[in-house]
Length: 189
Length: 140
Image (cartoon, rainbow over all chains, first blue to last red; front, side, top):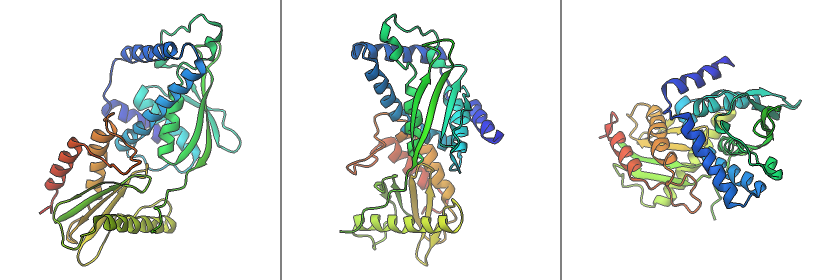
């Protein structure tokens, strides 16, 4: 599937408006910090809110991806994984996470990040429960929202994050729940 | 001659429509809108059954021609023209990528889900669509 990779590279090079990555890092950081303050260090709620924000972003980002790449519908979930990692993450974040740990039924895979622009300069607060925070959880929401628009209902969640423990990789697990049927128009009354 | 343009979202909801050269035949717009969706929906399903993941591009009668484009996110765009018009699928694709995505999807104030049938209501999209369609060969 080197074709998918070159589509991602091409779009990144010629069709994407770019911003300073530190601006993004700092903006995202202040959003997370604000959420932590708003929810009074209830990290489960922060995670949930980040996921929801990501979901709403994903619903829109997918259209930009489709419009700019003209990619056809994926034939199977493996193609989808390739498109998420090599086109989606490439064109919006300029990173390409590695796809690994496929389950036997090809319905689950992991995205492993060697670099993560959102988490540059990040140190978690020195609180005992700070490890409950999935700092970059917005990714999980984006993946869920974007794939729902192409009729794939998935669950996406962090398994480990280098921000929490530098000895672990940053890993998101994506599970295909089901392929959504096309909605049909309501019948005539 | 271009008669009208219709756009349907993934929930089968008509989220935009526009007439240019109105033919006397459409009086009941809501009815027409449902009929267009129904015919496009069935034709596209037949096409997909007959050959894998394919979509039909247009069909025509002696009086008009219907052009169709669908994005992988199930947004359906329909253009109705006179039968002489050459294929407009590319034009529909441009409307999707250049106008809908640019002005509606990327505009955070513009909803992309329309639960109560409010539809797309966005000046930039309106104006962009109008001037784009008017610039197409065979508009008048």
